[in-house]
Image 1 (cartoon, rainbow over the protein chains, first blue to last red):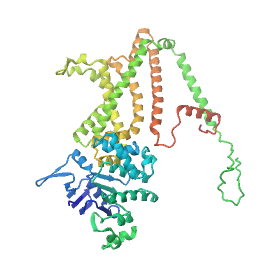
Image 2: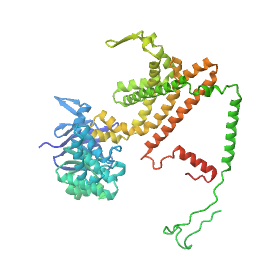
Image 3: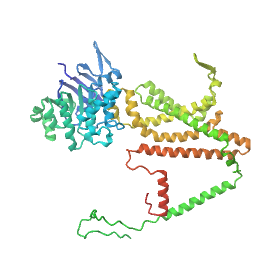
Image 4: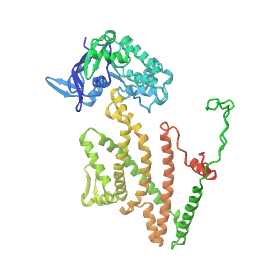
Length: 253
Length: 316
């Protein structure tokens, strides 16, 4: 079985700042893969590399067996055109820390936008699916509300529905609950838990250790651009081997 | 000075007890703004003095109402409005295009846009009008091989000269306004759109431009008002609009200066109407972004009158 995400020695720099210093990891299909670590450790950057919002400087990154951002012919790499990159992103859903819903569209229009504009689906088909998805995230009655009329937790759930509308094979979550009031975190995590139970492959950058322990199948602790420790969430979180992991966990748990 | 009455005994906390009874409203003597009365009197006096001076000048004021609704003047007004509208359409379409080009990652298109803006913003519009008018010196013929061929001088009518001159110049200014609007949209919006698999063009059309509008619209209204006045320059390239007609009538009727006043009055009327339109447009786009909408002009006038009568200056 090919890995859904495979990273081999991935490096990424922004100018002089060396953010990722050789990341190797593998995400199996239907796995919930959690990335934890202090801020600035490069976990969000790595996530953004997976759907080519950032371009990697060295190493190889594969999604579902295909190289991200490049085409390989013999020994040579060719950069993909924007349209080819866009084609690949259709299959990868992404959820952002700050939701990034389109503020000039209602909740249901947000969810319908990509299927209609990108897949050229009819509005009726897209609307039917959007209604189903909004129901699924518990917001069937908020379809006609604009994002500014929704709470943070509701906005994030619409954002998840929007990503799911493209029927992706992989979902990326970039600290999906970090911008939420504590009492709203649970609703979003419940939706993510439901997704995991349905067998969605998910890469989750998170500070929710409880979620990682309960739902996660694999966990990686990153610090300063390298993978410090990886394993099953229960093992890493309860019995960390490295000092750096221990000191991080002692602060957040 | 004041006569605030506490509702409870002194040993209770200072927060007044809330309804059902409710606290007694404060009744205080308001601050008197004597300066406002004095300055209003001075301003009115100065205004009256200026009006008097003009009325006593060697100006035949009777000529203004005589020609105010002259058919040539009315024709000129419609021509001015038409030219304003068409030039602004060229300016806005060109401006959006240039702004997108300027922000493009393609160095060729962004350089072309930079050069265009540099040139058209850097030279006077009057000079540009003359250049368009006299382009026949450079290109003798216009030759669109299969469909059209003519002498440049007969192709370049005054209307086309005016439209190109004003529209292309405006496009450079609109480009900067649009660029500011496009840059004002959060980068996360573009990322979210790209992450959904939307192309650059789709992202721009569906996500970025609609959100940029609230930043672009108010200064564009300003540009329309500016354009309305700038159209008077095209009299120089023989296009007949309000100013040119007024000039012609003035020379024919022996009341040239009077006709300039007449034209000024018409421009003032038109810009006033546009200003009111712009005001309500801005109010419309302020919805959702600011909690308190600014008052309408009528509300403002009412509030000002009330504040003069009642020096406390309570806004209506």
